[in-house]
Image (cartoon, rainbow, N blue to C red):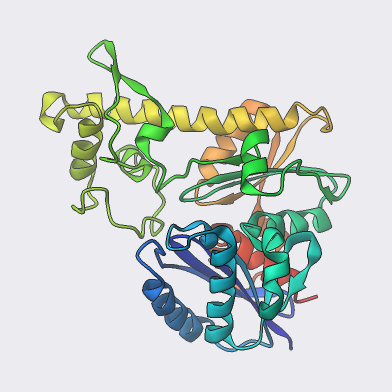
Length: 340
């Protein structure tokens, strides 16, 4: 039996998935915010190694090089690759179309390695599907990747390129800033401009609406207070220069609905831009991953496309792993791809 563990080092989460002969047996994510340094990441690796066990091969991808802990993306790539090697021993670093490289060779491949976790998912889908639009709505960002004729057909590769063509949308179900989702909201019959402060996140919006999946909000709240609906209302109200007591609960739920719809439209607009190339036949086959599966299902409905979830591409040891696979999609993709 060959065991491969895929690792995805993000700016705030470490994700891992274990495959035995290509079959996913474990998948999990751990809080590991990099902004204050790498100590939390080291703690997350320690816990994950205990949970995941040993492997014949460890394959790592990352987006954490963007954290402002590092002075540049290249420094981040090199530092995280070295840290992964220190923590895991013999490790391969995923470099997108260039395949896997050794930690000592990452400097010459840093542009291929940086934020390439989306490519691992797309490569797996391209192996299994001829045409698909892959949408991964995570805690911080959303990927919108076309698969055409069994090939990854993304027009961009770097974050900057992907942002420009709609293949990367900086909105997520948890960490997205409310003020980055819209610049105004309806309140008491008027459009109210937002306060440009990080008083609330999209986790507050989705907590109010009851659309925040269990176990996905691992970060502290914007004000450090509790993760309750009442506290989320207070934080959201502050974005509009108000207190929660200035309106009733139904009003704040309506405001939250406005922000959720704005987020949904931003992702749907990006998907429409990608689809406007005309390379897809109808209905558009959409494959969903991340923590926002229900949102992607609604986007598929609006676009008139078919809908499937990323976990359907995998052989799994137990049905309850399917949600975890979607939440840890790049790690699961690496574990499956390199088990072959």
